Amino acid sequence: MNNKITLKIVVITIVVMLIQIFIPAFNFNNLVIVPDILIIFLTYIGFYYGRFYVIILGFLMGISQDFITQVELLGTLAFTKSAIGFGLGTLAMYRNVWSGNTRMFFIFLLYNLHFLIYYFIKFSGVPISSAIYIQVILIHSLLSFVILFIIDKSFFNNEITFK
Amino acid sequence: MQRPRVPFINKDVLALLLTLFLSVLLLFTRTSPQIRQLKLQLSQLANTIAYPVIWYREVFIIREKNKLLKEQLIQFTLMNSELESYHRENIRLKEMLNFTKTQPLNFKTANVVNHNFGLPTNSITIDIGEKDGVVKNLTVMDENGLLGKTIQTGDHATLIQLITDKNFRVSIRIGEDRALGLFIPTHGKYGLLEGVRKSMPLTEGEIAYTSGISEIYPPNIPVARVVSIKRDENNPFQHIVVELVGSLENLDYVFVIL
Image (cartoon, rainbow over the protein chains, first blue to last red):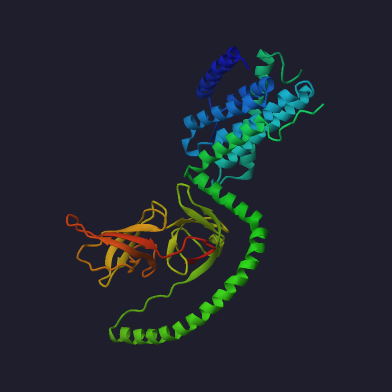
């Protein structure tokens, strides 16, 4: 990765983080759900630049997100974003092997894994039913996935989802 | 032509392990209820996984312990008969002085399944919980003396704040006059007794017992032994360094006073 690309990624990272701060949230069963734009950005980093960069960037973004939104659970998002970063980096390795559908299925699974770990830690010791737990994970994953789908269709000419 | 060596751990895996390690480290320095619950769940899981190994190891240890316990049993039998006579004498004397009867302590024995030294809360996890009648704020001790108190309970596990934890405090009585003081841990097995007045005669080796003032700890549980005493002219209280009576090394089992 040369300096020009690094600088470009740093600038985009800052912009994405600013969007993440100001993105509107909605309420589901008294739980505030904020669409996660950062994992969409990490999906593209993983797709274009591979595992190493997405793991490092995922960790840094996760830790920044933890500092801003939940200091009492510092490390949670850093953990989940680093973990799925490894999976998202796999997209680059199989870029020419996997079909669009396989990629979409794999990304959706990773998003689910991300929110599964995140909510497992967040809801530890909190009396909450399994149904709501599963619903929140699915809604959050689906929301991020739909945003990825729209972004990919609008700005990247279906680079990830169909090609 | 030699084939190039492919390293087993490449830089991607190394980066993943490093970032996950840092994240877990950060996560476990937190003291929020979720993280405490998570630690409890993880230690329960680790206990379940490690059970066969622990069981196998314990078979060998039990044989040695049994031998030691038999020797101790003989000593205690002799001591017990002596104490029995003192006990009867004590009851007689108390009756003469019209003392009210005290309730004997009920306790449950528990195995230590996890040690969390070095984390913000110096704690251990034991294998009994709410299903066994354990609740928050119960006294925990070994056969020698006080070890801590219960701070969080699960169905089959309980988190114990150890006496060596920096936030641990316990009210004590010491000396012939049973003067009040406060035990504060400092480092390792050592601590300080604060608030013991200078006029109180004390010698090294004396034992401080729980005062019974607290709602958590019953009276007369040995806490610490006096190691050194300093009397400063400008200070109305003595500077007493003590060492813990309860043994925190090789902690296998503890008693929870119900």
